[in-house]
Amino acid sequence: MAYPHVRSFRSEPVRAEIAPRPLLAGDLVPALGIAVASIAFAPIMQAANAGLAIVVESLIGCAIVLAAPAYAPSIAVFIIFFQNLFVSILSSYIATEQEMDFVKGYNFLICAVMWLVTLALYLLRERRHSAEIDRIMRWGLMTLAVVGVYFLLGATQDAHASLVYLRNIAFPLFLFQLSLLTAATFDIRITPFLVAVAILLIVCGYVELLFRDFWLTITNGYTFWHFDELKATRSGSWEAEMRQTGNVPVDLIDRFRFSFLNSPLFEDLGLSSILRIFGPNMSPISFGYGIAFSVLFLFAVGYRWLALAAIPLLIFCSVKGALVLVIFVALAWTATWLFGATITLAVALVGLAVYAIAAIHIGLQIGDFHVIGFMGGWDGFRQNLIGRGLGVGGNLSEGYFSIDWNAAQAAGTMDGAVESAVGVLLYQMGIGAVVPLGFFFAMALKAWRLYASSGILTQGLAAFGTMVVLVNGIFQEEALFAPPALGLLLCLTGLVLGHHLRTQGDDPKATAR
Image 1 (cartoon, one colour):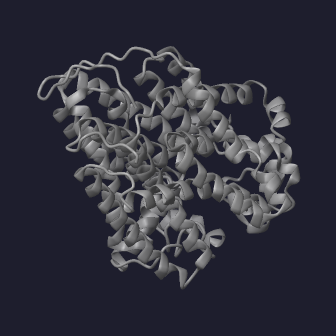
Image 2 (cartoon, one colour):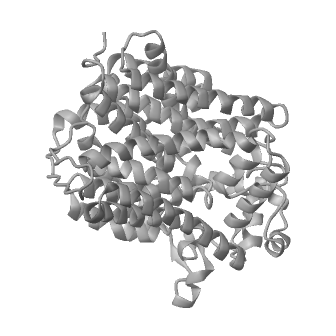
Image 3 (tube, one colour):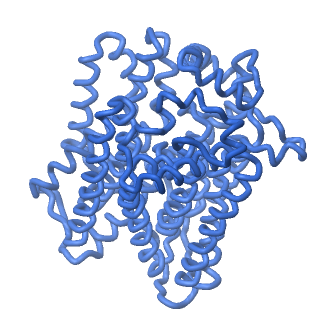
């Protein structure tokens, strides 16, 4: 990742000047072509033969790292956002909701294979790196080992739930290490690709917002969402949601109606219902974080009118955490420009603590499910400091759909931890939750140190964005477990750290053998 020149500083305010960069076909076409080919036909292959589909997708992941390794982070970002679009378009080839869930997991499979091959090349010393890269990788692998221990503990009680949470926790770390090692080895130009992805997200968002029926038709959305309805009905989640909210959907469009920011606080403003945007990844929270990242990234690299054009989509996604991400990072950039990096970091950390405390207090007052879920995780942590194992007591637990939310709201807590990634981690991993959370925060601080000395806004986005999403994890499961949230920011963090260590590190230039 190449950056325009920015005046360095230590104790003075930053003055970042970033000019727009032209999008070059040579940077985009091969990466986009490989990305589309890697995932577009997975539903058809799955329908033909599931075993063959797994083998083919795994071989594609291997081939990308071995034949076109510099494109690996770009392809990971693309399939995170657009896999479900292809799944939706080809959903007529899918027979059951279980098969649909399986197909949705191919983005993880490809990314995990790319990470594994990249890691293997690193461990075999086929690609040499600086001592700092070795330290970061060592701490990352130790983090994975700790998570693995809790996975084994949880697998003895609920193997499926334990496996899902292992994927949720490991995926962001996979993306970070994949990007770190790739950027530390190759001179990659991912900025044009990320701009192109942002433009595609904006176009998809506006088409869905303005022409909902057309969007559902061209994406085969009615078939796609039918599978989701079947799953929700059979699992009991639909019934539980109707009991919680009192909303009974009549047709598919009704399923897209939510209270603004999913909060009763805005009902007095006449914003009790909004037609939410789900985007190409068919998830409002994932799409909201994708748009938030796009707004900030486009602004950072100079496409500021495009960034402004995306803001209405952020509103219609109606995701509190995504809005907080944009506001917080924008304020951090501004404060760094005005007061300097060190003061801004101190104020930002205090501000995040105040935000968390205030949101928990308000959430308890209004009976917010996410805050109650976090308190359940906190109480569970105090009762068992060691932890219970991955998959125990989270949203995938057997008792989730039988939760008495009225009793939980009255008590201000619950037995178990749901709707809060941090609460779930505390409940399942106990004191061990400090390891992944601490590692992610430490990488954010490393990105901040680069930002403090360079003023490059993308480094500031990686640093402050990761910090605020970690705090958002108190109030959302998706903040830490949805790849377009923490995963995407850690992908950017790996890119900026890897690029810096390749070009400025203590080793000579690292190149692939």
